[in-house]
Structures are given as structure tokens and as C-alpha cells.
Image 1 (spheres, helix red, strand yellow):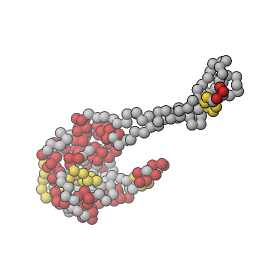
Image 2: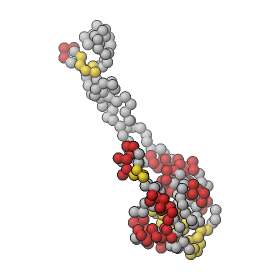
Image 3: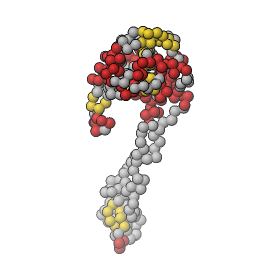
Image 4: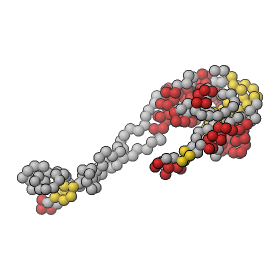
Length: 268
């Protein structure tokens, strides 16, 4: 990989060169990125489960011995736990899963461990690997992104000062990313099944990720563009760099983000 990258203006013309930090030299490890993305996804899961004694708060008991006041043998009834009534009488079947108000057979357990842990060094290596994947042309195109410029895409730090959605869209189109923006805009589709009632009912396509060094308005200017995300360079994670655990998201770096990434030795 080249040690330098061209810094582009809003029209896609080169304004100079910037040295790429060592994070871009990390080998691309799809297996490691997928594991880190899954570990991050499990942090969003919420424990759920039934009350442990649900369906068991009853006087029902099974009487299997013969010659007992409440025996169920040879009485023409199912031999199952039944409620205790007065005068040694038995009531309805309770407790068992196939009875009315009975417990569930295999309910979700609230004590199930949902979070998958990952080593800190392993996580940092996965982030570096995902950063390096954003500069690999074949990996980015394999995700389905459409672009006409060389990778990595580095723009002037003036991009961080954009405050209007129209200006940010025009700047991205000037960099040759209009086809990818259209792909994300037309890729919004309804979810299938029960998921249609949740999460807004729609599934969106991930497009450009904008990584900035200092937020001077760029986050607000890009938040309403379909498929586009903006994040500070010190807050990067695998979920943004590799949505779904698949590396190679089309990423636009500002010059300030590249310099900050190398100066502060982030994720090393």
C-alpha cells in the first residue's frame, strides 16, 4: 500500500499529499473483523425471560401412591398434578406445561449470558484491520460500493466545516460518489415478517462513512443523507467500518482525521 494519499478538494482535484499512518498497513482479517462485529452486536441485546415461579404458584400435587385419600390411580382421570381441595378432593390439573395456567415448557432464561467478550488487543487489531480494508479497492468493491476515485479517499479539512445537507451532498458527488449515494437511496426496502412492525419497518443500505477529526458541523450536515454516517476518528468501531461484519465500507477521511490518527496513535 502507498505510504501517501492524495488530498482532494470538493471537486475531486488533488491539493497535495498526506502521509498515511501505520494503521493502514494492517493485514485485512475478515475472520477477526466478523468476530469483533458480533461481539459489539451482542452488547445491544436485552435480557428477557419469564418469572422463575410462573405457573408454579398453586397447591397442585401429583399423588401416585395407592390407598391414599387423593389417589389418582383407577379413578378414570389423567394422573397429573391436581389442585388440593377440601375434604381430600382434587381439582383441575395445574403446573404441567400442557395444562391451563401451567408453566412454559422451555421459557427464555433471563440468566442466559448474551454478551460475547473479546480481548482488548484483539478488538484493536480488528479496528486496524477494518481501517486498512477501507483503502483496498477490491475489498470495497466486493461490498457493492460504486465509486470512480482512488482509495483511500482523503478530503481537505474544510469538509468538517460544512453545515448544510445540500453542500455535503454536492461535495460527496464531486468526489465521484453519486452512484453509491443513489444506490443507498434506492436500496431502502421494507423488512419481512414480524420485523416489519419493529425498527421502523424498513431496512437501509450502508453507503459512505465520513471520518472527521473535529466536528464543526459536518455531523449535522450529513445525518439526513440516506446510508451516510459521520463519526469522529477517536470513536471508530467495527460496526461502522464493517457493517454486518463485512469489511470494506466506502470511507471518506478528512485530512485532520488522518493526521490525528497518526499523531495520537489511535487503536495501536
